[in-house]
Length: 433
Image (cartoon, rainbow, N blue to C red):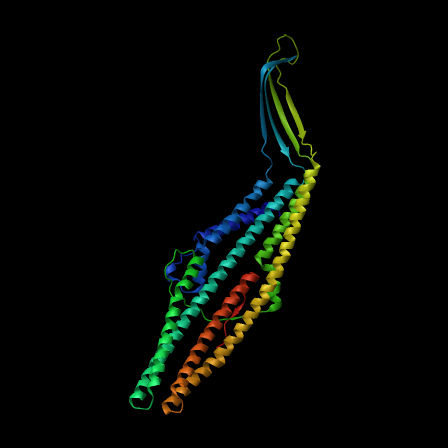
């Protein structure tokens, strides 16, 4: 593909992105009506200041391409003879010239290639910033969902213990229970009220995280409405292939490496001279001696010039510097890839661990704890266990409920991190009914 075609395509991409960033292509999202994850992501993409800054850096890098491709400015010269120079054809009054310098063969191409690769690197850094932003939004969103579910569970348990407290009072009045049963119920009520208040106060910092990602000045956000849970397919082999092929940080480093190699080639070209071509015109008056041939004729001079690349030691230092910078970028790319592989391994472990816990609590422990709670209430009514046994069953049920919700949030937060690392959304499949 020709460089002009590439540049035009990039400019079109920037135009589309700018239109999207300005909100021209879709309906505006009301911040006070944000409920679903897609709404949060759309709002963040349109308003986040860090993403806008990354976009402007990309656009600024694109404008380096036509500058790199351009020739040096033509040079205009003018000379006025303070004392006229008398020649055979007449006195010379003034001199006008224009010249153009042409860089040595390959210099402009190397310079343009370096600028184009740097622009592509800026584009990939913009995409990396967008992925990071989406991860931050998803992470805070799933934490918000967890908080809502945890508050619902705490309220449910509070209502349950209120019923237990009434039951203990009734049994105490009829002498079927002891006074400590009522006291234990009141202690548990106070503990649960404190836990509920703690969860409710946690809403402010969670909303603050979302507001920061959304570039909102502050203020409350409605409770989120999560979409139907989906099963995410995680294939380790495919994930690592996607990481190496699609991670924008790695791609940005690859383009930086290409830009550095083009600068090496440009440094090598400094050993060769630049060529100049120009034309001079000299105004000449009529000769004082009549009858001379070519009297008053203005001479026109075709000029050729070139610089002399004499300071070869400095040119060699420039080339060595460019090569060192290319090796630096190559090593940075390898370092980033190694760290990304380690991150993916860690996140994969967290995903698998959260999936195991989600299945354990959702399919086994929470149903069993609920069964234990019902059996304990029946046994307490029958007088076969004490009130502490009933409270312990209630505490176990609440703890398992919260751990189930924590495992659910952890799973989707880690999947969001995995998508940021591999540079693409993972395939989601709705569970069969």
